[in-house]
Image 1 (cartoon, rainbow, N blue to C red):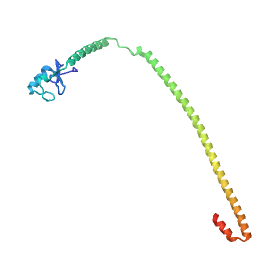
Image 2 (tube, one colour):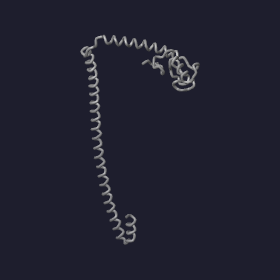
Image 3 (cartoon, rainbow, N blue to C red):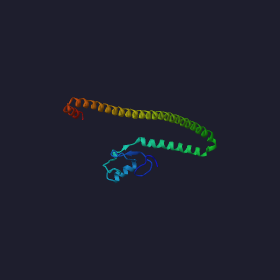
Image 4 (tube, rainbow, N blue to C red):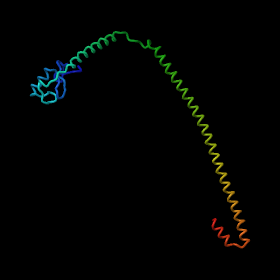
Length: 185
């Protein structure tokens, strides 16, 4: 199948022209015949069309000729390739082995780098984990110290309170003692 084929006769375009409305390519004789047969209408888009409205497409024919030349060259090259002896796998083994060796060396280097990075991350993780545990123990110790100090302050306060009560009671100021106690409790 040619790239530029007439939509009417399905052959390679001869003297290509196209409709000024739909731009569909056809052979001049085919499209003129279609216009006459269809009552001055394009055979493709059915729009009003006169023979004088047709536009010649110069480059389509030239392009088809160049395409034929390229196709002939491709056919000649294909024939030459078919006649040429096929390379065997054994001819390519050294190159394949060289490529595979280089690839595996690259992958081995990447693997070693990854292992090295993994060891570094594990060492950093272990240090951070140790520091975390130490911080946690320090925090627990600080909490115990605060609780002990709170308990000691409570004991001192009670002792102070007993002394104050004793002083007030010995001076006979029971009402003052009750007012003092209710203000702190």
